Amino acid sequence: MTRYINALLVFLMVLSAAAVYDMKYEAEIAAENINKKQTEIAQAREDISLLKAEWALLTRPARMRDLLDRHHDILNLTPMSSDHIGTLADIPAKPVVPAPGTPVEQSADGSAVLPRIQDETRRVQ
Image (cartoon, rainbow, N blue to C red; front, side, top):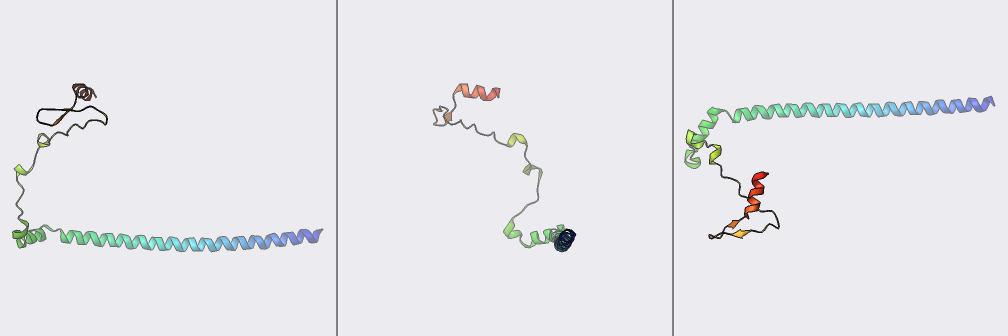
């Protein structure tokens, strides 16, 4: 009887050793993957930093002015003035679109006119 118990315990010990070895191997693989991802993240951050520096270099006001002067005949750009800026009143109102199935009447000039009831319900909403 003790032989069977000893054999069972030895088998369980070998099985436990194999499970621990497998866990160790998986942990090493996970650590390698983490290191790879950290390296990729560091490289991406370095690339972003480089691109930001390049963008700052390309969008310098002095460079923009030089490009504008050099290509003025093609671009025809003018400095911005106050009449280029509009107000909310300058924006046209959104046209009323009838819901599907709503009867639409035609006005004398041929444009669509919604029934009076439809207009009143839109004002209430």
